Length: 119
Length: 119
Image 1 (tube, each protein chain N blue to C red):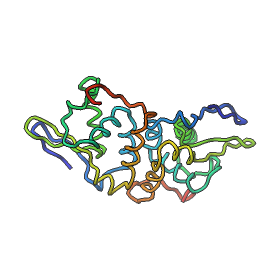
Image 2 (image 1 turned 135 degrees about the horizontal axis):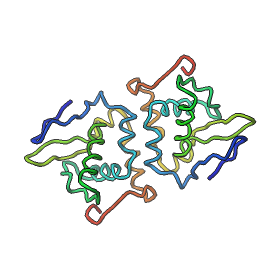
Image 3 (image 1 turned 180 degrees about the horizontal axis):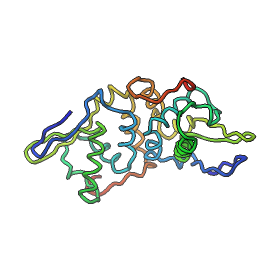
Image 4 (image 1 turned 60 degrees about the vertical axis):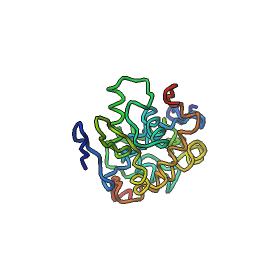
């Protein structure tokens, strides 16, 4: 499944193409977990609003991993890319998984990166 | 936490050392998911009984990743290493996560490797 934005075509797997190992891999990083956590709070969020203190290219890489695994969807609006969590697709394919991960990220022990801008 | 077996000392994290990214990473591979699936059916299982058609060194690597993430525990008995799933520790730290992963591995769409020996 290819999503055309104003910038270029971005690959996003269809619901029945989601793979459990790929989804788990995409969630196996503290920065990507933080992105997922923030998207669970508000969808249609532009990349620049996550307050992650890393280089732009590094952040883009993390979004790409999440998008290609099917965890995050991206749609273009004007010159912006708006990101959302694919809650329904994930719940349909792997019931309870996203909720369990989000619950786990709520505990302090996961030590996710938080900055003033994202808190 | 170090577990002494008849062979050597093996690192296994204590419950409060379990890290969500490490656990998710350890589960992000079809072979490791298959190991976890089989350990959910029967514990105290020696490495050689999983029917995985891969080189011994590759299989050892997969068990090491699972052990060091705290998903699998290993104890020595004579010359054998017996593997078990750390269900209680995982459930305590990340409630619902292991069950959600195991449910997802039950669906045919996860395309896990299965051999005659392990079926």
